Image 1 (cartoon, rainbow, N blue to C red):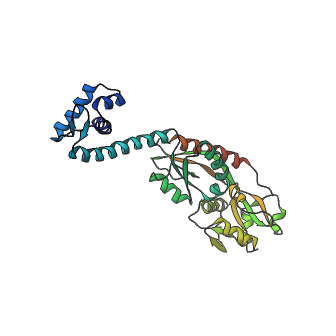
Image 2: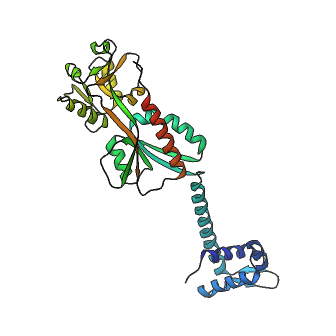
Length: 304
């Protein structure tokens, strides 16, 4: 048995019409062509689907059963095609992205504002995650793209860098280091240090900076989230080191930020994608806006 979608469409049209000629007119085909299609269906099923008279066309009991099923199949298939077509031009659908928390809090709001104007029917899933989880979601194809620092070399991924994110000392305004225009990493060891956990990209880059100065981070406090570190700094419990992009996540009123030097360490930020996946039009729009905004944000110098 090999009944095609087109045959089902012809049968559904005939089941709704008063005659084969009326159904043929609606389909834009000849009546003999329509009659031939119905005969083929009946032959394949071994059933009579219509009682034909000179004045009317009436479905048999078997015809009514098939009409109910065929109508659902045709409608579902046509709806699926319409949905695919709508997604291809960005009218409906969903984009899913993974971003570092600092990007989600600083870059993403303006980007999403522009996105919703361009694609009002597209939903966006934002996964604000630490580096390792963002990379894992990208590798597993769960998200359309990820905004991260340079990840380990995975053959299925490609990374395009869009900006550098230098590190700043964050301390209270009355702290001795706040009097300086810049601070060396070596000078930070004389004060209680509030570090991010080892699972964060911030901590990894801070460890690199300390290592280049033959130092080790010995944190007085260790936290998971940037707002927690900043809250401890604001309470006078120590100092911390954060990338410039994260500084927009909190109020600066009681705090001072000073560039960290010797060495100058920069967190390289960019977009991670799967090499063999072609993003949808909405995903490409969002990716391009994120990349452009990220590059612009990385060029700004935080206020002292």
